[in-house]
Structures are given as structure tokens and as C-alpha cells.
Image (cartoon, rainbow, N blue to C red; front, side, top):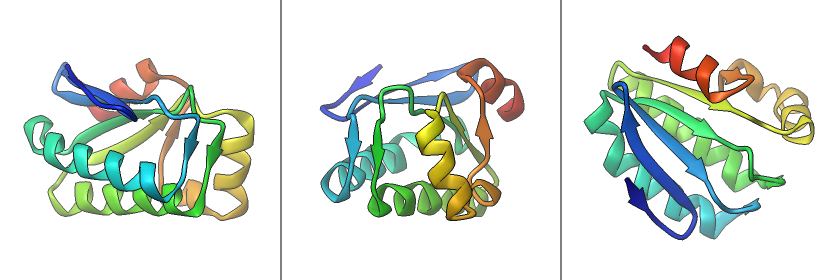
Length: 116
């Protein structure tokens, strides 16, 4: 498992499972998280499950990071799923229509099944 200040990640069943540990994901956190996941994702064939259970604020930079990771995953014939998003985060995704771009699963198990 790779541990960092803002995200823990490990490859489980061929999927990179990334648990965001920061309650707030703004510009600085997005840069750090995005960089770490970009380095780790090739080892899982760009199949990425991002656990947002601990995230209470997802700023525009955080949304951009999720979109960029998803695009990079598609470019590399992989996929990304978000799991355990709070109702508030889901509302932001719906209001910005990013729920159409960034696939959401209710929990990590559901995300893992869709990514395998």
C-alpha cells in the first residue's frame, strides 16, 4: 500500500483502490492526489476506484482532477469509478453534470465489480 498525506492507494483484484484521506480537496490536495494516482494507475491497467467517504468538500480543482484522471484512464483503455460520495458531493456532481462524465458507485464493492 502506498501511503501519502492525502491518499492511500493499493492494487486489489487488478483495481487501483484510492482512499482520499483529506476532508477538503482543493488545489493543493488535488495536485498531490492526482500526481500519486497517475504514477500508480498503470500498474492496475488504469482501472481506478476512488473512495470519497472522508471527503466533505470537493472544490473545483478536485472536480477537475477527477475529470482529468478519468480522461487519462480512457486514453489508456481503463476506467474510473467514484465510491462512497456523500449526498453533498453527489449533489455537486449532479449540479455540474459531472455525474455524466465521472461514473459513481454507491460503495467500493460496487465500484470494484464494475471495474473488473
